[in-house]
Image (cartoon, rainbow over all chains, first blue to last red; front, side, top):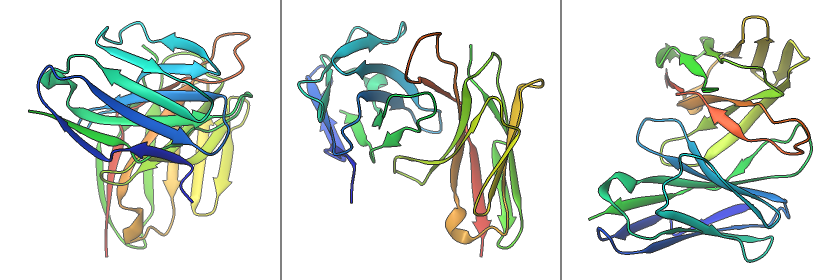
Length: 113
Length: 115
């Protein structure tokens, strides 16, 4: 059973046209993360939530925003996508505590035309 | 940067052989984790080793951690074609008092196991 679900799996948008990616979880985890992964690179953390507390990484572009309306859902908004934003976007969750793994969804592959 | 470096970048072996991947990192950690990623999919957690542990096993996986050298290795024994994937190490270096981790991933090793 899927525990972290990302929709859609593939998203195509136009240069400059806002796009929203979604993530839901059935694990009831406190922490949710968004990563960007470009081709043949390591996943890079964009931001994360601990419950409703939002934490932005210092080098995350202002173009990227996130919302977490409840425990189960989290959204990634890209306000004006540029060609450099084409990537796989991965959502992950973890429980609190010192030694918790992260559980990933299958990602959304974003293409910019 | 905390980011780990992995070695080799790519590894090609025959089914039944062992595969060893190495990871180095730069600062103190709470724990180190290994993940597998099949092409076009999300990451799957394989194993977590705490900073006070030196070795951990899970099925055909064996992970070692040497905090004095700031390095870790992942050994997959008796590899199978289904083990073909990218493997990433990730370090959790949480700030004091934080109850959850943020991971910094290495660049990954692409493992190809030929039938």
